[in-house]
Amino acid sequence: MYARTWKLNLLPNFFEPVFYLASVGIGVGAYVQQMGGLRYVEFLAPGLVCVAAMNGASFEVTYNVFIRLAFEKTYDAMLTTPIEPDDVLVGEVTWAITRSMIYGGCFYTILVAASLAPLPASLLVVPVLALAGLLFAALGLAFCVRLPAIDFFSYYFTMFLTPLFLFSDVFFPLKERLSPAWLTVAEVLPLLHPVRLARAAFHGGAEPLRVAWDLTYILVLSALLLLYARGRIRRRLTN
Amino acid sequence: MAACGDAAMISPPPPAPKGIIRARGVSKRFGDRMAVDGLDLDVPAGCCFGLLGPNGAGKTTTLRMLYGVTRPTSGRIEVFGLDVATHSRTVRARLGVTLQESVLIEALTPVENLMVFGRYHLMRDAELRPRIDELIDFLQLGSHRDVPVRNLSGGFKRRLAVALSLVARPQLLILDEPTTGLDPAVRLALWTKVRELRDHGTTVLVTTHYMDEAERLCDRVAIMAAGAVLVEGEPRELISRLLARDTVEIEASEQEAAQLLSGYEESTNRMQAGNRAVVHLEDAAALVSHIRGRDSVADRRLIVRPTNLEDVFLHLTGMTLEASA
Image (cartoon, one colour):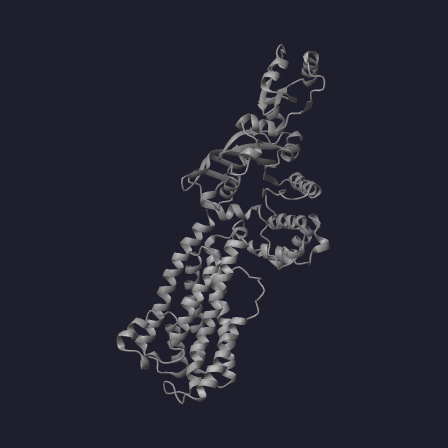
């Protein structure tokens, strides 16, 4: 929407899944023969791509947006120009998605180079990255606009994103470990849905109904959260 | 409504200029506090207009409503003849705002900051680059054009903030406390630029609580308190209409002052502030000799000075700026 000239931060969050892949995939993978019918490192790959995308969006719409909102007053300056609060929101979401695609895309390129991503089928993961970006931009923003102080973001990361990371089909197939009742509960986990889509892109086995459900979940939840964030941001910036 | 500045002196007389800003009955409520309460305001075109008042008088809220970011609880605001409630984007495209806190991007240089702001206005490179050079020149930022903002002094930052608000060649420039916290030389330099802009036809609306600056540099002023405009007019005219040209400050208690002034015929306007009587009148010399003639204290301190806007404010509100801040 509006050109952003913020310099790209170095990408520390991008390296996190790379390290996980190296450590867990190669290290633990040596002891785990198979996971979900695949070599362990192959099983990990699609999930970690989504984690990279999640991180990309999350850091942008949490710390960075909060700083612009509360400390740097960047938005107050923007609103003295023809920009409206809605433009700010669209800009931030677009930028978060872009970052998701950069993070996820770099990671994906590494996977391709390491022959962990079958071509061309796994290219379908690219739109999934955008969806993951959208979803976590919406989640992060909805949390961000409620926040009284910046310290509370540590809750978001350790109490929300970390468990998601651990329990969203990334490290082990939920359906092999959880009872049917718990599997139903697990459907609320946001990261599960992009991970499942990415896994289908990498290794096939997509069930149309499940794909439709995953897409619906991502789009509807994102829309609801963004609608909420929009109201809060408007009130915050225009009072 | 008269035009401001020299335009009115040039013949043939211009058609009655339309006000750039016209606000009627504007109020803004925050919770149970009325930040602005029934404000009326007219700012003529080509004018340097000062909005004065203590902190908390509602100046910043008023400005935010004028450029359409804060919505009034009630009332109507027109800028450039457009209703701000429905045309805020168009209105903002034609005005520039310098906020109270500089909101520069610290990591970027002045030129880069100007680029970003130009983008906010959807300006193209071909148009933006020469404009940036022009502004760097105009606000004398050339020596530091490629230094990151975080390394600039306060005066530089404020000039850059003003430059940002000028990127899109606004017809109306809104400055919120532009000189607060700057040293006198920098303040003077900034005001010189503001006057220059006005001379080239930009209407300037500036808030300040430095009444002396406003008196010297604004064509018209409105004094605000408690969310409403108390009086509006040319500074000199306000002073002579509401008080008088001269002011004598007498070091005396209320009773002493009454004694010293008894028998003095000319009408005066008197206030007592602690151990100081302040008298506003047209001819200070006569009063001074009147007092000297009957005073038992030979070395009583008398201060004679021109009446200023701060006196007007005190007269209108019964409070000093410091006390009400």
